[in-house]
Image (tube, rainbow, N blue to C red; front, side):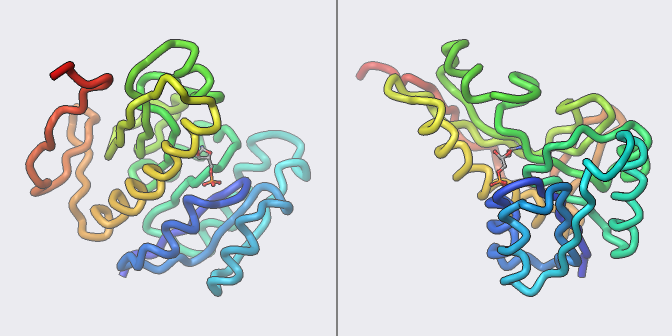
Length: 213
Ligand code: GRF
């Protein structure tokens, strides 16, 4: 059985979705950079070991990353899962876990890297928005894409309503990505893209707004 460590910074709803998805894996620990992260209590309720590596207790990013990797490595994970982890990691940290570090980002990458993705999607007037699970590489939000979910942007959407619909899809696609990982079906190609071995056939196109009949 694969062993994972989940890193969080806040409420941890993606972490909770993973814990409740009955995946064929062991969550060895949940680690937060913020002692106040709500997700820590949720993890404890599920009987998962928790650790805090407070970034404010470290002089710089490199010192924080070293402390963080010491905690992670104690659990010998096959995969490190960033789930709303809001610290930018050093290249050294990312390279240490190359191919076994994944993240969820609330946009259809490569659009809207960084923060405030839902506000920026609304401002740009995109008609389709969504979320992405990807392997992490040193360039922020640019690693090989594993899975994406797209949702229509509605005329009536606010940042909050859009965020809520994207979040519901985040919870679905993160578990799917982890299931593929557990089954050994994720392969990074020499071109730096991801192949899902024996993935089901492509779905139909999503057009938004839809055609007039
Ligand atoms: C999610 O939207 C995630 O994609 C983003 O931050 C949010 C974290 O939510 N990076 P949660 O802590 O998993 O509830």
